[in-house]
Length: 291
Image (cartoon, rainbow, N blue to C red):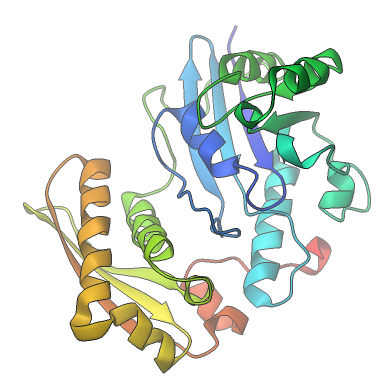
């Protein structure tokens, strides 16, 4: 008998959802940043072990949207909640008891899938604090160190439905390498930019040629204003060269071979508030039923 199903990781921004996905899958798929709202789209990871296959959905942080990009991010998170067989509601263990998931997600009713409340970042707590939380039956993990991950996988696996595997056992994601290349370029920009510009950065892969060595990738970083473009390029092009060099190393590690990154910067005014621009970058617009 095999079990398989969709496991949605949900929670407020910056609680470690992406780090948890990467830890369970055993490979970096979701970008990780100290800046909140870095995950904008659903990232799919597949963990297959023994007779269990977990299709894990990393989602944007739950928030009250202020503009079109955030509305699309919220819609993505809500769709993932609806698709779930099991929901991991992740919370920061250092921030106290979280509000119920239905409240955090502003749902009219609790989700249909069973919910496991998981406290992350327990490596930052004292031993006494961890013991107290365990006594309350709360699942404790550290996605950063791996503590508690095996227990979480075991508990989650037992709740999945009996089913044949949904994907081949050796796959780790359903998404194309182009998606991950764009995300790694954007992650590098997040790492090297200040507090304002990163939220205005989008990455589009214009060309991805795998039938040559090195692999050729043409990527464009879009910002909303000329002043942001100047910051991204930097004096004499130093900043964009630094981003390109670091991103190239990440993509090479991901694809397991050499690649040439041809990186450009362009302005697309107010793209975060434009439905057509969001569709261009692959973000699904919000639906009335998601609001």
